[in-house]
Length: 262
Image (cartoon, rainbow, N blue to C red; front, side):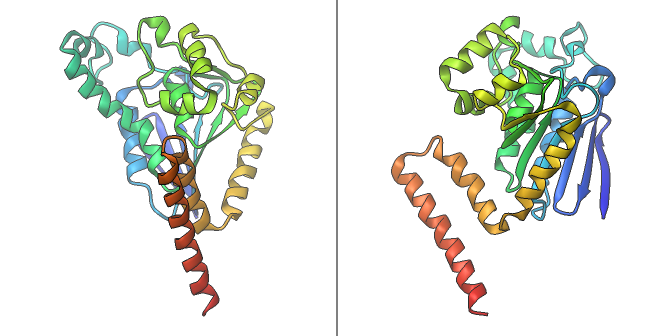
């Protein structure tokens, strides 16, 4: 049974069994993002039904997301949204507190038990790039163009994208991508580990569906233990990671023993 909701005017959410598809839905503006959209993304992530096993993040139209809606940087901003110019004119500490709320729409996806897959086509710039980085896996179309343009504007990436970017490509490559603001295409993204696979645009949906099916075919308990275990491996010390491995395995073995004894 398929269930669809629209938690934000530019965000649609569809549930089909154990799969939740979250679609940026403002194709006329290349899925430009605003703080209210980020709040909606955070609410979807933090309120995720534990029965959901896979989440797909995608964008309608020719682009995944062209990043922050530039109207946010105009005098007066966008009605109903945070006035970012006024925010910036206040103290640096107050601005940082506001940005902390913005980050939740991106950082929350790492904490959900479901595996998150981003299906990315066209432009994925700035906030769009960082939303793709918020996923666990990325399937990209051959027309994809990743770019981190914040430094070109005198800023830095601040939507939880720096940790996954460095984890995927290393400090030196991440620095070069962010400092230059250049585009990273599909083949380079796969070569550097930024994307899992690149396919022709017309195969993006089918390839994503195949990946989702493969994830659903994996034993549910093992996959739920695997995601946090591998995420912790990037930052945990050796002894901590060894402990996490054996604790996860202990839980799984105990569960299997219970099944076998029935």
